[in-house]
Length: 467
Image (tube, rainbow, N blue to C red; front, side, top):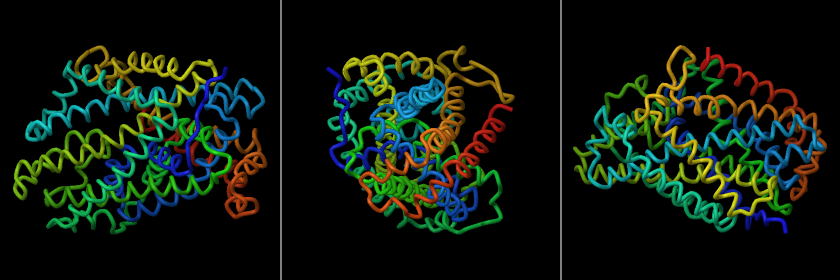
């Protein structure tokens, strides 16, 4: 008997789960700083343009591929292409990419767990020291937290689509939104917060360059989980009775709203507690900002609310980030699991256990890559600098491959599946799509403008990282 793949119980369940996959470290930390350093509201305008005219059509195409085939990325490319081997290979890339991104995300989530433990036991002062992050990521005790995290993630995934992924999203996504809103309101009432608001929302078009535009496209693409196979897989759990364009629009709006409000939290908080902050000194790296810079900002709160109050605020923020990381991690790990179920006919239990072993095998050396093992810390060399195994995974699969996979989705949808096939699938559950301006734009852009933009982003990323 074939394994029951499962299905989201409702359109809301899909929207929350898809938003959970999209909302992550980039939304809550990297996006606000990128905006502040690259023209404020000018960057926001470019970012929103990219969401609407580049990302939205690709999102719909990925979800439509999943719903049409009722399969994972490998199965989707294979079935819709009529079994063509070259497209099956592209689908395999759509499985390998989220698998390796899960390795990267697992390690960062382990660090978040350690920071939550340290803050809750009175260690905020220690975390604010310059040497704290380097010392923490080199602790052998990280493996205990890694084991704990993997148990939690795979227990959730054993629950399946409705009982695991959807249930987690229905609990954590509203909780995350409420926490973000409350923290933002609190920060905006502080003296000095207006300076951060100005850096974030006042447009400075003089800072807009081709590099900034490229960064906006890249971040918009990455923040919506495009090119990871997530939306193809989630599309396979999506009901034929619901509208893909409407649901996709809601996911994009939720993801963008979280990123926008994160900016209203992060930048005003930084300037409220350290008025002398120079935004040029802020790292656009989510890792660097979360683990090295923000603990110092929270510690500076003790002058106003005391050490305990500062610790509570820090605990609330890191809990918020942990929720975002956990929902993303669960979504990413589900992609290879769906492949083992569809292609190898594994039961969900067997697929989850198999994936747990595989993830552990790769997450262990990634965890050892920042000081525990010299071999994995100095694993390779490119771009003129020594790189760890963790860096390699992040650079190749998180920064480089995603726009390439997105490019192939566009080419596949426009020229292999044909826009007529894509339009027919998008019209199911949405009587207004056929003949709409959105349909006309997708028919034109998916085979021309959007793949060209993604190819430029891919080439630019390769040049910046590896050459």
